[in-house]
Every structure is written in structure tokens, then in C-alpha cells.
Image (cartoon, rainbow, N blue to C red; front, side, top):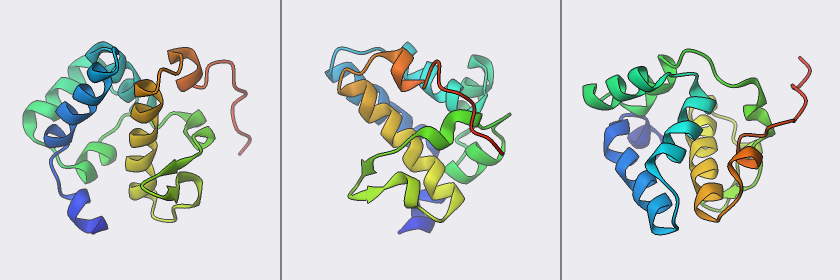
Length: 122
């Protein structure tokens, strides 16, 4: 199952993220902000990978920089605790799923983006 999602075009899942957020009164712009926060893409870069049909593996491989606070994303997605996922790519995908879930549940954007959280020590 994991490998199948790795090769799924990000552009095929992106509209589902937006639709989920919009059904709950949130916006495409907020979804984009979450994605940019997690991956370091700017809006032009995000639009380019969507337009190119880049798969999840390529999407995260080409991400300019993973947010250092991404490791603060915790919780359950699809019955699995995201902080316990061993495969790095699957964990990144589930982090993104978790952020979109938090947005759809009405959590404040500042909280979703872990604003004010100290950077994790290395």
C-alpha cells in the first residue's frame, strides 16, 4: 500500500485536501499555506509541482526544506500515530494529512503551523 501512494500524483490528492478544508469553511489559501510551511515551497513552486503531475515521492524529494518543527506534528491518521511511522516518506505524507485534518477541524492556523514552538534540538 505504501508504495502505491508514493507514486500517486500529488495533483490527484491536492484537490481532495482543498475540498476537505472548504467543506469545513476553510480556504484553498490556508491549505496552500500549510503545504508551504511543511515543505518550504513558495507558491510558484507548489503550483509547478501540481501542474507537472509530480508524485508524492518527487514532491517531497524536491521540497526546498522540510520545516524543522514538522517533528512536532503528532496524533493519529488512519489509525496510526504519525510520530511512530518509521518510513520517512510515509511520515511526511501523514504529517500533511494531519495538518489538513487539523485545519478541517477548525484549529487556528497559528496552532497548526506550530507557531511559537521552540525549534527541536538536534
